[in-house]
Picture 1: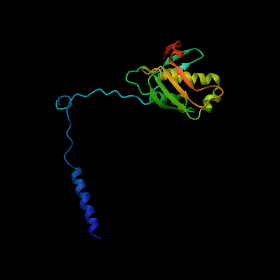
Picture 2: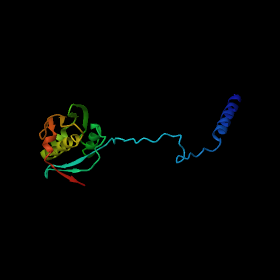
Picture 3: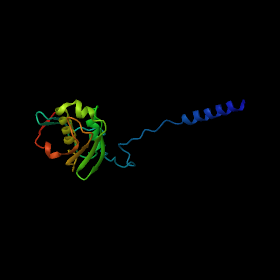
Picture 4: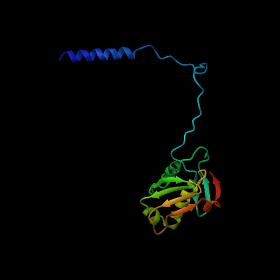
Length: 166
């Protein structure tokens, strides 16, 4: 039994010696030519909202400018879900020029928000998702309610909205 603690001490001592080696060398990257040049990596944010929408004034206000390299509908859906947390919009697929979405529990959206609120939500979804290159339609699938019906919504329905900038 006394043999196990001695082995433990030998092991800990060896670990101490290995960790106390010479200090790390500082690398001078300004004068070192052994390293390849750094590539510029464009990261795609996972939560984006390009526009806020005011259907009463028929305006859309730009809140995020850079659309280059952003082609992921899920990032935009994450942004929409951030400003409408009680409505869980889900990305289904992208096919051709259409983004397909689904809302499981749409009661709040279709009944509690009123016609105005539901229309503004739909406009927000369509305006933001059709900002993506080559997306002209959004298929919104959800249970029918008293203030909104599912269907395919077109980018052209919102092209007359005046563009505002923050």
